[in-house]
Length: 216
Ligand SMILES: [Ca+2]
Ligand SMILES: [Ca+2]
Picture (tube, rainbow, N blue to C red):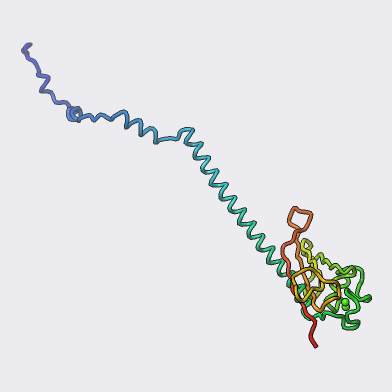
């Protein structure tokens, strides 16, 4: 018969979870939990600030690209304009100051050299002052022409404006002298361009040089 006084000492009991139960519990400060939570997402303010910074960066890049393209376009236009001015200069290099047939009798194209337009007459010109045109004030070529006096038909936005004038030998960069009054001719080629979206042309470059009559 079982002794009813038997008592199992509960302190001697060893359950399988006893070791786990003895693992010390480390308390985590609330402040640490709070910091960790703050790194797990962005507030609305942070998102807005980031969006503004990114927008400013994108705008800066776009502005820099536009400035670069403007600079590149300007350099290309200047190079093209200089090339067109040089075409004109090359064409005129070997022309005398006076007409081979009539001498200095006519400042401008001789009668049989003017066909009504600059483009139609330029093939007949055989002295420098012919380029003063029938009015004596110069000629305009649009489309521009090359050194062989042919129109460059795919460059209709470009214009060569040429003036030929006598100058005082003591002041070759000064005001023009009366037509036919000196043995020095100043030739000026102004190259203009109609920018995309514009209706009027603007000057891109100009080239000017002085030619003296041969001595003797
Ligand atoms: Ca002539
Ligand atoms: Ca002439």
